[in-house]
Amino acid sequence: MTLNTRFELRNKLGEGAMSEVFAAFDRNLQRPVAIKILKGFDRGGIYEEMRQRFLVDARAAARITHPNVVTVYDAGHFGAGIAIVMELAKDTLRKMLSRTPQLPPDTVGNITAQIGDGLKCLHGMGIVHRDIKPSNILLAAAGVPKIGDFGLAHLPASDLTRSGTVIGTPKYMSPEQAQGQDVDYRTDIFSLGVVVFEMLTGRTPFGFPAAEDHELLSRIISDPTPKPSQLNPAVAAGFDVIVARALAKNPLDRYQDAGEMAAALRNYKTIT
Image (tube, rainbow, N blue to C red; front, side):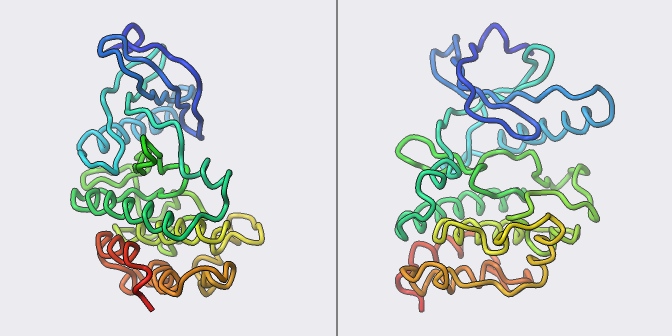
């Protein structure tokens, strides 16, 4: 299906290693949308793998109906490449943090609890996102957070993600992910814990001072997790407890359900 005649591209919203995202307009349904377009690569094996990952993104998201997961409307050819059409969200958590590096505790609890709700839905469908980070958390109308970008998602029947391959964003990787081991839903819980830490303190727990990726991954695997309150004394004790559990090195010591973590985030003031 060609999308060129139906959708009118407008301004660019952002870009990553694989794709560019534009605000666009759906001429048929007369509504604003976002279109993610796969960047041009040299044709061959690399392009084909990227194209398959791109389609994994669309297929994973299209299976889900949840208020905290981005809605995919369509996918098809756009120009010489392929594109995914989805709901428009002009802001991301990354942009919010660039404006306000440390967010109020209630805002942190509210946003991350909703992301936990979205993860519970994904995990219930057998989907491990594997790249939870602020730039993949979209902020829709009224600031509702939505999980986006499923390009690294591990689906039950997918062979695009293999044991022994380190895939993801280093600052937000779990120890098992950093070692190229098999991962399950608990790797997303670890990544969400990193996001909580960053929202409270303005930095990630293992990314300061800045380091090469190999050193950063070594810290994630071996270094003890700092408490958010060590960097921001205003942080409530409940967040220290939540972060410590979410960022446990052993997946068995973490929250075993994203819904359980979401409940803790909503009740952080009562946790000691």
